[in-house]
Image (cartoon, one colour):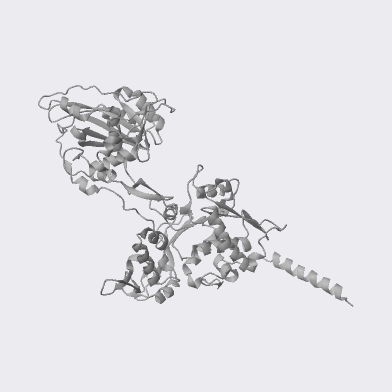
Length: 621
């Protein structure tokens, strides 16, 4: 007869054997979305607590399932607010804890952001889900690690880092990497934090996966937008409930009424189908979302990238989004609406000059340059496969003439291309009154990939006033600073205040009447030249309560602008008084009067500030 004690022991052994068999039994072949619906409960305090159901957000299913796709290594979510990108991130982490154990690494922009995510998102998810809670080590227990730096579980660990601390990334690697709100990351001395983590995961080969999420920020400096464009660029198409054609939701198609006094009526908001014009209500949108699908516009190459705006959120009605827009508009904060709601980058409408208006000012010089020109300079920009050079003419009161813009193709690391530049810089140009003008000075940018080649060329041609320069950003710098020889070529290197020089150039381009400071253009210049000349605009940014101005590209190519700046810098290095020179030139006779040019001021401990320095620039602002 079995005693009560023996029965208890037998029951314990059977229970242990059952748990062992359960552990040894292979898990169901779940996709991540299926595993999440079977196991994840959304904690109280969220919009819809309880078991997760993707019917409310069907656009989340495909990106989440990409974690089980062996052909996918990178996933990018450029998503707006209220779309559930953090939920995808959390579900993927849970999947790699409970269903497919793997080591993981999570990075947030700052330590504060990391702590907030842990306390409000991740820890509540673990505490609310038995399948996760039973696996993640308990705090201050002997079974593993559970603190603010790491959490362990059978088969792996989850480590935490924040972009503002390179120390939290060193010596750490994992096959699964999650980077949240990446547009809040700053480059550090070692590079971009996302790239650093991804590189450290290279040893895991095909096992590694990277998820990056963020709302975008400013166009041209948004990491998430660059990553989205690097992937296959997927957008979510839904069928119009009226015409059944597939459409994407665009802000321009959200429409609403105004009352007789012109007041906005957000409660009347609907979506007007761009195919048939029929109004789509909130209820119709929710139904159409369940029939939606992701469509890419680039070939897939291991990187699935997704764009989604708040317009797709089942939890945001059209009227709510319109109200948000009107509130942002009233406070002059449209950028946050564009970034957070539309998930689009903000393009600053800064100070700029129109290329079309400048192109209309082209003049015919009839193979000779205007007799008002008394001096020529050149500016050369070095590219990977070419040299770009602009030849500028200068006259009384700094009236300027763009004589030529020449592109010479070749390898800047070989002497052949520099020989072509020699031929160009040895050229002379005849004025209409018969004077022969040489190029008196040339400034060549040394800040690219061929620095040593520029140093060698400038040093060899110093007698012909060929100067190596390097651009220095920031307001208030002189156009040209004191030269230094502390470089590998032991070549005089002139720092150029590029922002100050661009201020001068753009101020002159805005002058409409011929005369002082006006810029003339030769009809040899094509339309592309003017696009490059106006390829940047100045905008005002805010950082930590301070305003500062910065030039940003609005087009990819800006060589013409750079060459113009370098030509102005060459004139500043010469330190010539153009009006005095013009007085000495007799326009009624052939020839020109020789004028001595003062060398740059190199007095010890005295900064080099040429006559066309800060005061000159301010006079033209």
